[in-house]
Image (cartoon, rainbow, N blue to C red; front, side, top):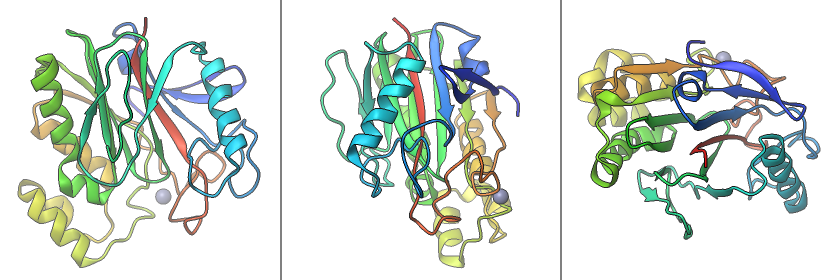
Length: 257
Ligand SMILES: [Zn+2]
């Protein structure tokens, strides 16, 4: 689990991306399912809207998380994810970011949020600007190039050079629990022809695949949580394991004020 460490904030267990947080004034965390107000099958800390949980419970959970992190006054912008590759730049006065699976920002005090339950959370930190990016990479987003688009957008807007970035791949469904069909493999092979070796088996390691995409783009340090959301029932929601009716963990990343 290089570059990650479990910690606590306000009674909530949190996976901290120490590889980023130790490098500057940046927040980079991933939540567990423990500690919130939601009831079965969204118990306890469901942070995803539109998954069938009570709206009031999700709002209370999000508030509890931000208070625990000491971010009560911060602006959090949540990606409205659609398994695509659109990147939204978030500025000081954020607008909505519809149909965006990646967010980027260089604004201190703006926190980028995404929700996950098997898909791969990809964190990017450019300590030089400084700037951050957060991508939501399921197999469709990976095939659509969401990580490459995120790095391209950071380069275009912030002058970010991948070889100066720190990246991290958070918990996601592991090859132990993720069997995919030939059509998924074919679409990934078409998108990532340089990584055909990893795409031979139907037991897909989507976290490793995204780590290799980052390395292929020139990021020298890619940290991996190497935790399977499906195997770790006590810690994480898993869309596939739970038959689609489940909650969402959150990834948050931002430059602190
Ligand atoms: Zn597993």
